[in-house]
Length: 206
Ligand code: GLN
Image 1 (cartoon, rainbow, N blue to C red):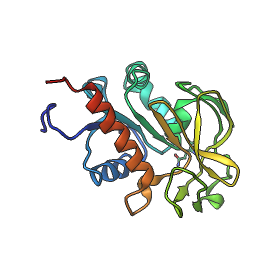
Image 2 (cartoon, rainbow, N blue to C red):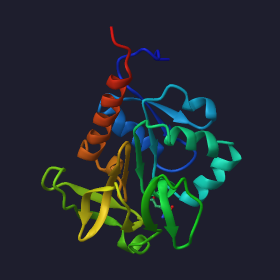
Image 3 (cartoon, rainbow, N blue to C red):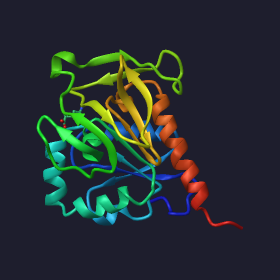
Image 4 (cartoon, helix red, strand yellow):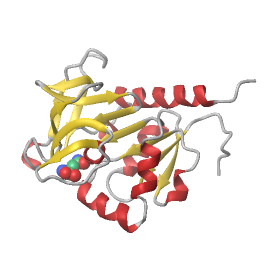
């Protein structure tokens, strides 16, 4: 096992359900170590957290079963960089509709589950963004639609007019799945940059 003092950052990937393996592979491609998070003990000494895509209702059930709801919430609110995709974004959102459901409410956005329709409307779409390289695309799978954005939330990319990549401080969230796209994705690179900056700021000075 890698030591906690290893130079490369360590990101915990919630691994109860969903596409956590793809997130781990995407992070490894950027030189970031990962740990699968299934228990409260797995949350110790992390430099970042990923909430993957999957089914948010199933994740809520499993978080309760594992006793992980409150410990994970404390980590998410601690200021450590967080990257949430799709179902992960639903877990972070302040307001969830279609139907309403419990969430950590750390990100002041409203999301409508399956807001682009079901499987029929899944696919890879062009993104409009001032911060991502031209031509960047996003893969949407039964994605939530962001219908309202609160104060302090930066919209980093849109699909048409809809916000699909948002950030508030250390919380980065996407309606789409950069971890499923084959080439190293600029959104994963952005998150890894946030993690490295956080680690550098936290490192003891000599
Ligand atoms: N539709 C799922 C949900 O509501 C999210 C889909 C995804 O993560 N790709 O939780």
